[in-house]
Image (tube, rainbow, N blue to C red; front, side, top):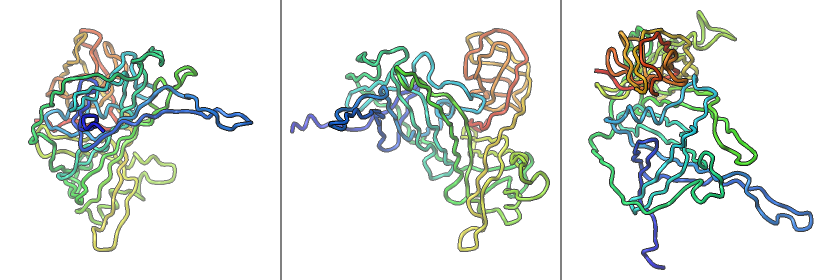
Length: 380
């Protein structure tokens, strides 16, 4: 065995214009589908391809404080308002793996198919695992040599890394629009707050190519934590099991309120769930805290606000009289706004960044609808 033939080593990932550095080892799994070809006389005599090539890329991204807004936009893009939309666009977004050994592996078309769990705790890895799915290129014939992937020699350039920018922070949880103790500063056990967003995707297939896209069917989210400063009386308010608005057939969201989990300073991550309601959690009578793990599920808050908004064609920047009441993730509709556009960033008191370029220049009254959840940074 020639030692020079050994392969291996680390790599980084590039998707949709963003370079992701990753924790530990990560992998690409080929999801090759076959069916058995049988005869009565000899049984299985061959295997035939039942679906064109597909790959699953699974990795844990490193969270950098300086680029956390960009990471949120790329890794947590889905909202319930996007139900029925396809995640693979007509213009393919390639996924590129650049190895330190000087090879690039480029998948022709990729899309995010699993959003990461986020752990808000000072000594935990911020992002959990994400998953990208790779298909053959749009309009490609699977018999083409580069329909699915290409591998080439590529000079390795090490991405910039400042260890001091890797995200670790102390986070505070607040529950209620006008919270009082302890909900104005919820303390958790050492595991912190765990936020789990989930997108349910339905594959769309053709007889020729099989899976050619995925449609968004549903988006849900929940937060789990074990509170340490919540009494039995507080727990009764957090996990409502009786009283006004409670009963069989009643909407659980009517018992909820706003939940915010925020970092310690300007520029640190912030999660906002406009309508979170307790769905699970019990009491314990042992050596640990009285209240066990609590689950708050995100519910739809189907409210909207209208604001006079100035836009410029082919620009993502928009201006309003005041950004009060607007949050990242809000769906936007109206003149000059493409379907599926959301607030990507609240820049300051009057300026927004949209997720897609406006299609008209002028001032119009736009409608902003509350998201299931919003991830941004603590403002100045």
